[in-house]
Each structure stands twice: as C-alpha cells, then as structure tokens.
Image 1 (cartoon, rainbow, N blue to C red):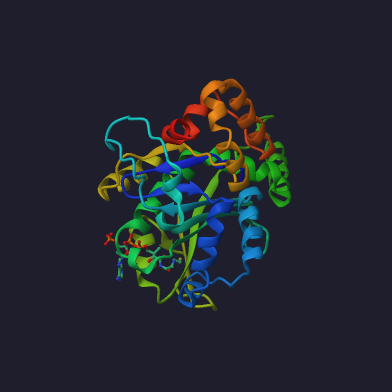
Image 2: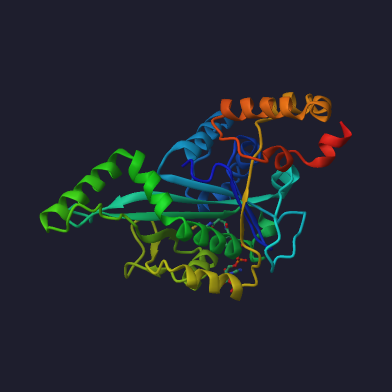
Length: 313
Ligand SMILES: CC(C)(COP(=O)(O)OP(=O)(O)OC[C@H]1O[C@@H](n2cnc3c(N)ncnc32)[C@H](O)[C@@H]1OP(=O)(O)O)[C@@H](O)C(=O)NCCC(=O)NCCS
C-alpha cells in the first residue's frame, strides 16, 4: 500500500523502512536459502520476479510491508522527543536483517455466511541466522503492531478504498446498516483480528507470537502442519507496555525518502549547483520526486541529502 511509502519507524533495537527497489537484490539473496523458503512457506523467485513482487507490495492496497534493519547509526536519546534523521547508509544491504508484512483480507466464514470482517495476516522473517534469537524479531513485531494499530483507520481505509472485494464488503456493511436502521452514517470497518500462520515445529515463532497475545484458533494444526494464531485485543496501550517491557525505546515514525539510484545519481551531480542556486536545485528534486509518484514536502532539501554530501561535492 502507499500509506508507508515515505515512513520509517525508528526504535533503539530495530529500524523499519518501506520495502523499496534498492532492497530487492539483498532480499533476493536471502530467499535463495532453502531453510528460509521452508520456514516462510515461500517459493524461490528470479530477480526480475522479485522486483515485480516489490512493486506489488508497494502498490497493492491489501499489502503493507517494511524491511527490518539494525537501528539507525545516528543514535538519538531514545527516551526523549529528539528529532530523528536517517542517513542513506541506515538501510544499506549490510544493515538489513529481515522483513515484516501485513496482508489484509476479508473473512466471512467458511460458508460465506458470517458478517464480513477485515483480518490482517502478519509475516515476519529475521533472515540473517546470526541475528536470530537476539530480540530483533520481538522488537520488529512490536514496533509494527504499534504502527498498524495507531494507523488502523488509514490502513483499512486504503484497503477498502481500492480493493475490489473489500469495496463490496463495504457496500454490504452499509446495506446491513440501512436494514437495521442504523442511520446514514458509514459503518466503520476496523481490523477485527491480526493473524499469523506458523509451522508446528517453529517453536521460536510460536513462542514469540503467543508471548504478545496471539492465541491458537483451532485444537490442532491444519492439513499443512501449520497453526493459525489470532490477536483480537488491538489496544495500543498493551503494545506500548510490551515495547517498554522488552526494553525497546524511542519509537518514532520518521520521514523516509530516497530517490531511485538513477535519479539519485543525477541529483548528486547537481550539488555544486545547489551551493549557488538552491532554489533551482529544489525544483529539480521536486520534479524528480513527482516523476517517482512522491509528494514533495516543505524543508525536504535539508532533510533528504546528508549535509556532508552537499558540502563536499
Ligand atoms: C521466528 C523469528 C521471526 C523470531 O525472531 P527472533 O529475532 O529470532 O526472536 P527473538 O530473539 O525476538 O525472540 C523471540 C522469542 O522467541 C523465543 N525464542 C528465542 N529463541 C528461541 C529458541 N532458540 N527456541 C525457542 N524459542 C526461542 C523466546 O520466547 C523469545 O522471547 P524472549 O525475548 O522472551 O526470550 C525468527 O527466528 C525468524 O525469522 N526465523 C526464520 C523465519 C521464520 O520462522 N519466520 C516465522 C514464520 S511465521
């Protein structure tokens, strides 16, 4: 979805950044690993297909995704309200450790007879083996939960606004409202539950999700040997408490913006120009951002190129 195109989430333990084109080569390397394919129930893709998947994660209204990185190297006092600025090294290939996704779907029961609700299915991967068991999975999951819960209306709004099936659900919900005489007001569609599917032998993942309030929904694992777990309590207070209890400090949503490498190269060449004619440089960046489907913002010039890059060119 487009909601998080220019949003990063910074904490003392992990940094989450929107999955973008320049992350694809490293992501593709991870997915060659057979153990990862097994644990995440994924098929290997070609590099070209992986680029296609990245685009679909960016543009499809039913998908929200972040790349998990080590925390920003420009540490800030995590327990106050200091401004956070990211550098382009913060999400370079060597800083990337995994990914976390939400896939929205409509659940109206096996027979299709229940009132339709929106379910958000989570997928989490700490790809680098050396990084597992060090608290990154927990930190990423909690930061992501906080983001999803805090932005629930926007997440569901983008989904029901663009997804064909979800639009029908919205219409159905409105019709139900009218039938029972609940007035003209639009029925608010919320995330009814977050869910995750975990292989029955994946004890670490089961322990992690159960420890943050996900519960198994059936007595036995399904035909594919997976448990489905769901979390119904989507109060933000609980997640904030879990973040604090896990020692994850300084949750901040920060502006994330990178031009694609080609556009970036052409902008860097303009740096000399910037020193003498910043307004024209800004126009150039504005133009490139619009060409990439992004919205320029006030003050972006100072926030998007690291000062040393501008000064030393
Ligand atoms: C499952 C996964 C996401 C967990 O992330 P992680 O960073 O390794 O886990 P964390 O270090 O945050 O530990 C989370 C919890 O897992 C449990 N755990 C950690 N190491 C464990 C181990 N060796 N055995 C069993 N449980 C373990 C603990 O309950 C821990 O909680 P704690 O912090 O209270 O001790 C990660 O290991 C992973 O991506 N594995 C490969 C792909 C995968 O299995 N994805 C999940 C598909 S649903």
